Length: 302
Image 1 (cartoon, rainbow, N blue to C red):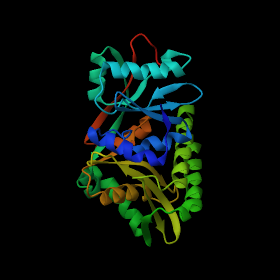
Image 2 (cartoon, helix red, strand yellow):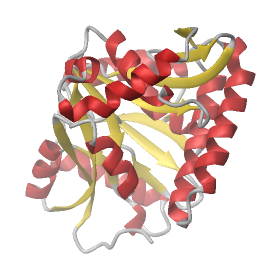
Image 3 (cartoon, one colour):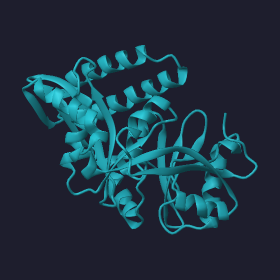
Image 4 (cartoon, rainbow, N blue to C red):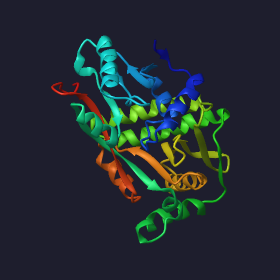
């Protein structure tokens, strides 16, 4: 029997995610939890594997492959669960599949489709910013610091109103420069996600930081560690469009703090060329392949 996701379920997810390491950002309770603003999230155990299902008015899908020791029959049972909820079996699919799991599923006869890659960096390189390749990044950080009275601290609920005002200022600036409908759609989704983070800072493993000039907040960022103990994910970074260098400063400073992690994951570019260029400008250590999986003969959902 499936259960609606609650914060109290974190220990179960922690246990399963620690059993098999994966550097993709989806393999975290925090990442799954934040999607509750868009989907009904349920989980259950199938063949002693953790299975997470997302549902909305369109249909039901698995957010990531089963976690645990699974095989062909386990995956078939997962598709049966989705099929029972979907009016169209083409909606049944598994998202956020790693290269290793995709190779295995392909051998079982499933169709694996490439999705936008995720960007993985060496944390040390992001903090040191050495060499000509990072000259502009160092310059931006120094430009911000020269403005003076920089204050960096943890996000707290009492900061919510000021951060919401900053978020809407950031959103208005970004959306005014977008002409493509898909880009505007992604920005609106991001606005909702960050808004939800401001409401629930007590989610296990979620870290929030704000940066201000004096008492005025000009930057906000959130992130979380993966249970593998090697990767820290940065999931949101909101900087005032009026303050030069604040985004570069936040990215470097937040990375500096994560001393126990070797890598920083900044997630995918969602297929946006401008976002891809920005992520490539920090010289990723690796581009992590991501796949979605369906049964052969079924077209992707429209």
